[in-house]
Image (tube, rainbow, N blue to C red; front, top):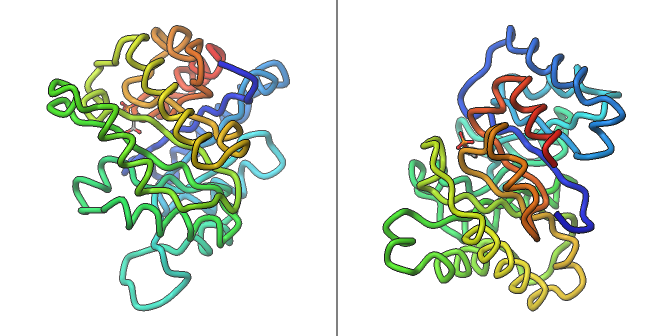
Length: 249
Ligand code: PEP
């Protein structure tokens, strides 16, 4: 909640084939004027579908983004995708530092920062993901861990729009969510850190909550102070669920 427009972004992860264009079409159709007044919508399909989805969503109110980028603009990086390629395909944003990238691909805060800088260089905005593990929360270190990730994953000045997603690792794909009080505490702390570091620009950063957001819990989560939207994994693959989450904003 707050004065910022909510953004609901769907992270499809490694799911989706050409036939999944049906889901995008339903999301576009469902994002009517009433819903568009409540929340911005973005779909982040796998890279194979990026250009087709961007073309299909062109002229609609639904934006398309990517799930990762390389820090370099071009070069000998087999299998990687540059932010410039995402922009060329019609993407508007890129998720960087998702916990699955940090864990399964060994990405450090410095790597994430370089990818965020690449996003701005290409004219995209980054959705920078942070979040503690279950063990870190149980040890009472959640705020410190996330503060360190924010500090290391962002540059010293903001060259463009920024979205930060707080995604507790233990809440991703598990059906578990933090309490409203824990989300409020974390988002308040992230907001203070961003304002301390960037001044007024820190007030304009949209802070998304991610981790097992569903139609049944979205209203409660989206009403929390300094929660400016959601990053949605599993539920974003079902158009009706994704739209219901946006309606809850
Ligand atoms: C995610 O991985 O970004 C995510 C929020 O996943 P889920 O909604 O499935 O927990």
